[in-house]
Length: 375
Image: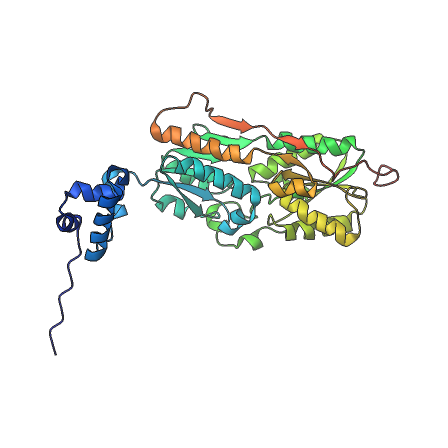
């Protein structure tokens, strides 16, 4: 049996430099500072590296030397597919990513529904907490890291920078608009109020779809709301519709399918409802499909208001609450970059709430005389 061939030694930076006849620093620049070399010289270096089987600098070793990873972790308290399916979340993530990429930073999405383990082990230079339940262990895990941190759409925390929107103000304007049109019985399609079992260890053991039921919101369930965005929008709706009857239904997932299902259930149980307030444009799109199934015309038989003003909403003629989604992403990026650089931005407040506004289109109209409980 012939002796086994010895494994070929792994090529090094020095081997590439020797093959090209340049310094080790020049080879390093070909990977890390390509603007320092001519295109011809860099091409020679990379070609020699390929021939020798040199894979390039070890990113882990490089981050250890620099003490920086060049990566920012975004902690998302839901499965990642939810973020990609939500147009408002996609707009926010795109704007945030561009803001960080302009400074040479990459964004790492950490899907951690109630589970702090990915937060504690992630090799990142900073953290962004996006839409976590107030009963979750995620907030504590993020703050315990002691890294530059920004909270997004969360309740303000001492010593932590927060960026969000005026959720309650936008919701109140939407409810007041319907009240001014004469609507007295109003349905509400809510985003998820919170896990049934707040807290990381218990909630993570239960699939999100099972932990949160869709359907009518009881007073006890409403009292347990732990998602800040949902709580603020519901608070705004109640303030704007004071003295009117609201019928809130919870949607476990922010999808058109769940919006349609819950709108069908709500309108079936409460046919006196003449208007729907939806906590997202996605839910409103589902509600519009439900109205079509029931033969109720929009806005003649049913007024409809969304939230977010995603691009498709204008084409659909949806009355909705606009939020500055792209601006929010940019502000979050700026707030984090200011912390990383150690140079505070004088315009950055510890709690930065961006304004919202009602955009009236063709999906709302006055209540017909004789409809609803106010006849």
